[in-house]
Image (cartoon, rainbow over all chains, first blue to last red; front, side, top):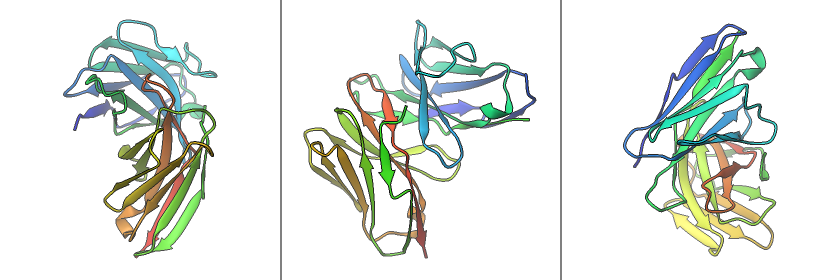
Length: 117
Length: 111
């Protein structure tokens, strides 16, 4: 099946710094990718839809200036957590549907665990 | 936003027993999917059931969908210790690919 990777898998940063997380589709092109956040023992909450060549679409309550999304190519979307604070510590997961015409199939990355000190 | 709730929140069973998890959702859907997540890991897609389907099987998994009640159930038969994980339902409302996840069930299968 298709593979989605994320980098880094873990990151620890100081409060106030910015952190960039990459999501790559390794063997297929993805015009759309999704970013989720998951707090411990909770479900995945959709943050935004990343669209190649256009602006991301953010879910209600998600600050677009805080969570910058750039989908610069058909295989890469980046999520930048700007001026991170301890409450931003979470597990961030991306997903990408294949462009095979089957709208049902999505592939998830392994996740990035962000810890803000 | 979350589409709905899953119950139970946590389930502990003995190896060999069956595990049933339920998912309820709020809006009309295109399909409903079940995923498994091992602790601290990514998601593994288990099974998809479309809105015009009522039941689907895959190996030891059986999924039902009742669109009139806006609910689905996942049955894992003859459970194994390796089935220990969190299980999430996710609904897709239209052709936009967007998935909305339920609250999840944490399953513990005791050897």
